[in-house]
Image (cartoon, rainbow, N blue to C red; front, side, top):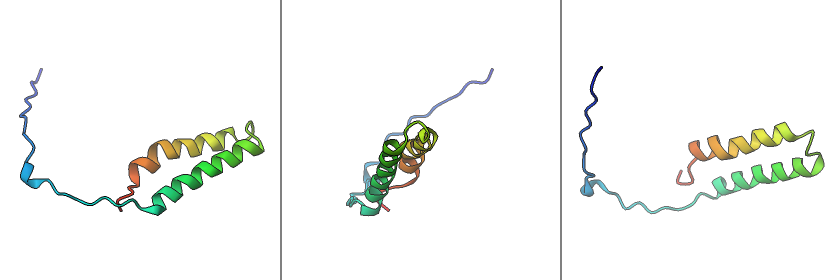
Length: 72
């Protein structure tokens, strides 16, 4: 069986960038829009729209937050 060697590397403090973080309002509006869509679907017919709500919820919890960044 092969052995795996790890060589720890301390972080380089000189590379740290002091980036000003400014939130992108489009990111927040996109999340708000998806939540409003889920609320609407839940109010109209929660049983029939269960799969659509689950799809939107999964998108908000995984893809939307992992791929989109408020920093641009």
